[in-house]
Image (cartoon, rainbow, N blue to C red; front, side):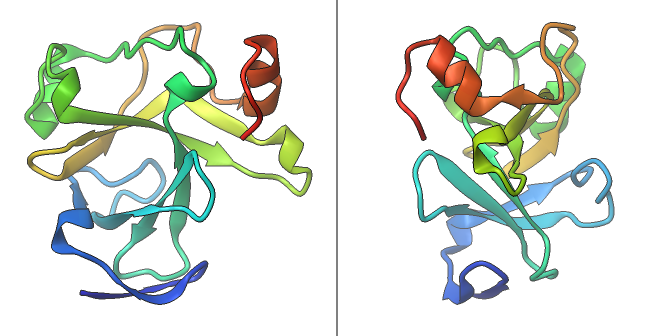
Length: 151
């Protein structure tokens, strides 16, 4: 399938990269079809809206910079994407990244994790029930605190 993107131009994607968001992403509820793409720089991914070339989200696995991250979402909400808390091997968990002009100040939203069912290729953004996780975790600072390598 051919996909028009802002960062990569026109690319071909496999059907397996398509993800249907049952409720959209917060603030973009009416956009339900996305493609999960490898970004040009690890550890980031792109979540590209299929029908809106100018809409894409940068994603990161929160465990990369917060190994203590816990997925604290309501069990009943997980059912919306056909998952249970014990289904960790069936899910991909991401945080949405915001990159300002000073990239050293990029943040990740751990309060609103994006969870994707790998098998069904459905996803949803959730709200964490743990007040420890905020909307602005400074990725580089937290990597440095943990002694991790820079992204």
